[in-house]
Image (tube, rainbow, N blue to C red; front, side, top):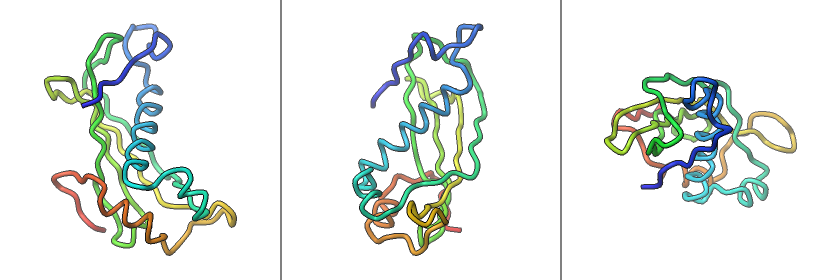
Length: 141
């Protein structure tokens, strides 16, 4: 389990994690796990594919402080069977597995040349999404 490292700049005037830092940390966690499942920058450039977000929302449950031991569990919550639309969930968890924040993103894929939503999803990207960790209540849409 990899704990997050927080910087002074990540805090707000109340000395807890500022709201926008959650989104930045979740974005990095998404890129890291996509990379782990073969959906890396090189693959996306080669396929002229990139992720695009439609909605990003966070529920804040408990404060996170500079010295908090927090990790992010990143999992697929929903996905179309063809991989063309997905919802990824990020749980910000303490070392005691207490939920501090729940962040969800809804997204799809864009053709980076045409600048339009892209279908079909390349097999290499769909393969990575299929192996992506899933929530206990994961559903195909």
